[in-house]
Amino acid sequence: MIIAVTNKQRRQAVLVLAIALLLAILVKLNFIIPVALDGWMHSWFNSFQSNFGDVIMTIATFLGNPVVDIVYTLILAGVLILARLRIPAVWAIITLLTGDIVLKIIQFLIQRSRPVGHLIGDSSPAFPSGHVFGLFVVIFIVSILIIPNINNIAIQFTMQWAAFLIGGLTLMSRIYFNANFFSDTIAAILFAYAWVVFAATCYAKLAKYLKARIPFFKYDEI
Image (cartoon, rainbow, N blue to C red; front, side, top):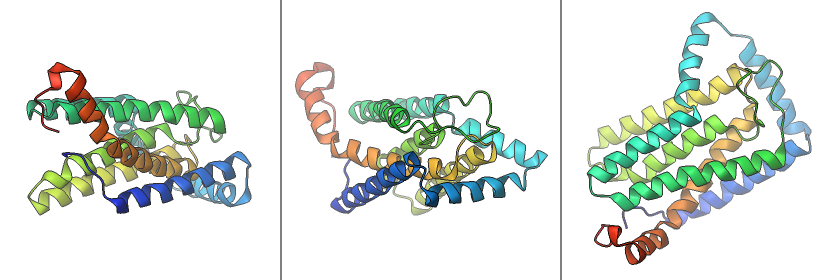
């Protein structure tokens, strides 16, 4: 299989999902531990705002915009199609879109308000962060699908480093602009990892279904 996860990754996904769900419950109950940490992180980020920081964080926010995440995924799917890997391309698109649906359900259930002073455009519930979730879904897709198939170690390292640098900057930008609390961003990463590993676990069934039921994919590599 082109897309596969190890039992270790599955165990990690179960663990991070449990942590994310626990965090969601604590946030919903307004429990002191995440709320106090969120308040401290919020104050700390507000203490070093500057014009230069505004520019960097604006770029980071743009790079993590949910619409841009779709563009990333479409570009990735296009590259995979050119490489005659159409089923993995379909999987990548489905993983992002269904992940966004799951995200909206979680946001609806938790209904956390955004921090005071957030941007007007940020009107949806805060927990978990949509920007961070979508971007890290893309990052984890690349980590599972693309990077392991690159033979050059230096290129692997550079791509991984660049992806997580962008992810980290986007995370910080959401706190910097009062769009999310710290726990919103951490939960988003945890949910993203669990979702991508779950989707990768389901890949074999999806690939076999497409090959068996849709003639267009009959001779595709899986």
